[in-house]
Image 1 (spheres, helix red, strand yellow):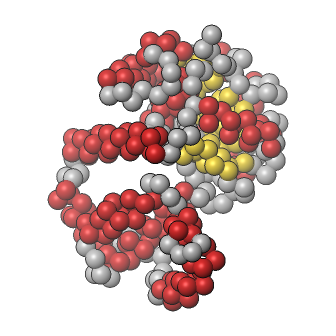
Image 2 (tube, helix red, strand yellow):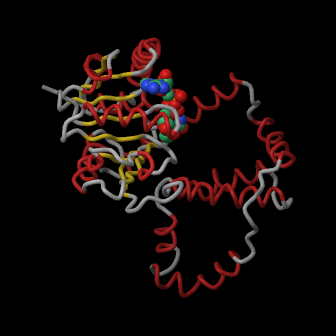
Image 3 (cartoon, helix red, strand yellow):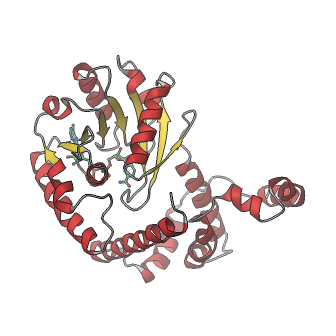
Length: 317
Ligand code: NAI
């Protein structure tokens, strides 16, 4: 009774595994396909372990039990069988345009007119990915944010020929699995999230390079300052609240903002010398060996899990 439809996740990997868990949490049957059989076996095993841990922490998503969710996910060694009867196919192969195009061409020749073909790509343009496909109207980018189980945003980016119903259906599906979809109206390099992220990285790098702030103090400005509010309200709402509404904010502050913006430098070179300086500072807190990095990522994910809980209490959907 809890099977709402069939989804196919191509292919397992870090992102594929998260999608599988999210779709199962929404009650959807999921078929995992990967070019490497071992990857499918690993994925199923990892998903089982991760779901158990989430259950113990009280953070398992959806209303189904671990066993019910696990029973919805299966591996499939054959791509044709995997997509049979699917309503949504989520591609998650490595970020390589030619590889992705090859897979979409293969899928294009075996799918019907109803299924949605969705790519997890972080930065490949829909117009390049889906060029020349017969089923282009059914194609879309649904870009998640790592780690997708804890960070709900999904950027939906259409190809110029993507049908509006494809966007609407994908939007509805993402909401159904508890994610937070947003629409990028027209494709642009970096989509929206990475454009914002790169603007921040760019100024952070310049400030460190010019000796204005140390790398670890720069990070504090985010984690103890801007990030605190950005977990709840965006930069535009911040403007709206920091004066008597947006118009009054612009009247009061726009000249000052423009004045500061004029002092911004060019695109950083990301020189080896600055990278080493930043790395030295980062390594004092988190040494860059696999164990320390993994432990810190786990801590980050736990923090995000708690933040997600807090957000669900203060912002009921
Ligand atoms: P990954 O390298 O962890 O996993 C890729 C999987 O694809 C592997 O299991 C591999 O065996 C499989 N694969 C390779 N060639 C294949 C083929 N021809 N047919 C079937 N399976 C094949 O990659 P990851 O990090 O999961 O990324 C996947 C996609 O998600 C990329 O497009 C990436 O840009 C996007 N993405 C990644 C994020 C991240 O932080 N890792 C965040 C958001 C999106």
